[in-house]
Figure 1 (tube, rainbow, N blue to C red):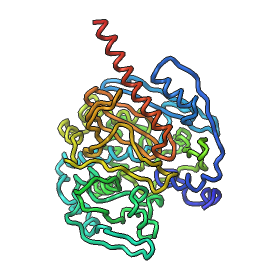
Figure 2: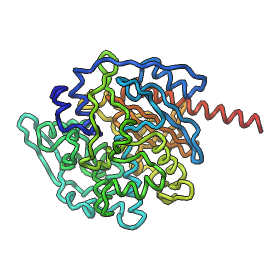
Figure 3: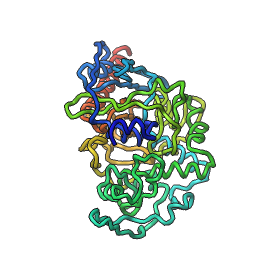
Length: 437
């Protein structure tokens, strides 16, 4: 598919799947773009400005807060370089897999109400999972697949912890070959057809990132009788005041959506053709939301404050504590390898040294030097959006860009520099407070 075909195709909704496909298709036609930045005295702000001035990023928004108030918010660069539109703190981003913690919170609300049990087979609520098989082997040459029944059915808890046996075709080589042969639709189609994918290992035997949370989105819809959009709005977004978070961006807000950029081989930025946003065909619990830094911070602060925001309670404190606990036992997060370097760069990594997983959140069992404490919660989105929640330091932060490939070196470096600046500033404020005492 060439650039013209991308413009004429049905890929007008640039969401999680179609943005990837459009970016790949348009890569050959992209023109280099660049941005400028000014200097500032604030060390955290300086990290953002340097990322633009040194041409690491086209644009970025970041925010830091505790449970009571926002401590820092800043924007640098441009949200649309072709139109010379400045990045602003109310810019709307495709947050992709940062949708997963939201879906996980929705599931835990259903657990609290007694309508879902964590250790029940997921097929209890989703009959389509009753016959799911394990893809034991696949011969790409003959297109012959060897399937078998799983040793045990995947449970709701295993879906929440990514130990269910499901994988992602952009990351798992066996599943990638199976999808490439046309056995099931790829994620890039964007209509939920990829939920027909088989397991790639027996549930509970290892951790692997995959489509588990999309199945959880279906579970929320099935049990609640609402669409995922309706459920999120009623039970999470409206109570938290997240007015700019949804699966669909209304026409009056679409001018605030950040353009998506693709790192070109020479290091410059290119912009795939920007298309009008169309209504979602599938509410992807694993990667379909749009949001802003301010909105997502409201969600993170709720988690940081034990499930409440002001007088409004989204989850019980003991539920948040369970979500924050390592659920993997002796299992650890396995390294992910990209099957498409334009989507994700090897080695795929997320800042924070994540090695464990809770119910919807990655966890680092060791402190990060100059950064977050052990036991912090975090995750990311494939367009290089990141957040972390540090219960020990009572701090949370988000840093948002709109860039492919995921795990881009310059983005990772900026995110890590941002984190160090946040904690250096926190330590400095603590020293000043002690002197005043």
